[in-house]
Length: 145
Length: 145
DNA sequence: TATTGTTATACTCTATAACTATA
DNA sequence: TATAGTTATAGAGTATAACAATA
Image (cartoon, rainbow over all chains, first blue to last red; front, side):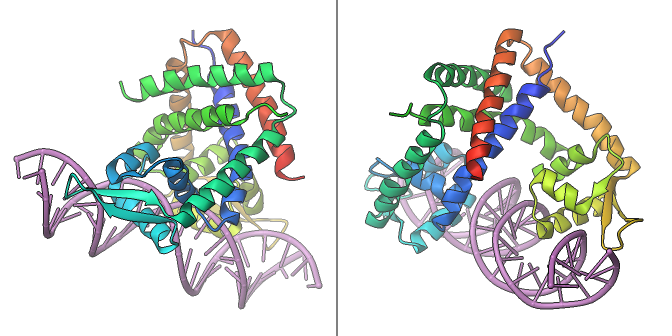
């Protein structure tokens, strides 16, 4: 007889929503959407990556990604460069402005979250991290059997 | 000096995404979207509730909620009833078809998640639930200071 | 005057499929 | 033939503000 999963799931969802409310407000205040911020965060500290790779990392379909990258390019935060090795391939990279957004907002966001979670004791943080990692492993394995 | 929050946050987000991939596939297979399922789950085991209350529980703006309820009504899963006590107020409740969707899919979803998480030991589940609850409390408190 | 819910507008994301150009 | 990305289309959610009816 299995342990009831609902209480844990419920807490996971609510906890994520609570985080999303805090982080999402910050992201929107930058004039970005969540997927757009996701792209910038993925490209940060990188020399850029192929369109396809970017889609895989951010869980975006290629058609969707074209639109998101278009809008980021319109804002001047991202640039497309033709791949030197494959004529079909595009490399997406942050512009100087995009680097600046990443450099200023990503650490700021983390720093803010650090202060928010400053009162959580180290032991609990480590435990939670491990347990979440464990839970994710199970979910991902069952997700694609 | 605060404990780094990024590892825990990262695991939280990924764990939620993993859950969302599993649950989301099930929801879409019913021809519903996540917000629509959220409405049905909220109205389940209820005699219905005021439009405003529904919006508060599902974190939907009133304008957004009108559209979602419209689409659920078009599918015959939900119905609007004028409030007997307040002429401005609408009460939203599940139709028989909506009850059926709730009764068949919600427990099925939970049952499925129960089997997915069956291998997690009881102790870990309880600990995870507690720690997530604790983390959420902090996030929600800081979310609106 | 304030509140409830609808309507209107504009934008973004998503899924899907057809299309192009390279490989 | 297969792959990388773009384009096209339609639907759905979000934010915002103006609006009608009622309190």
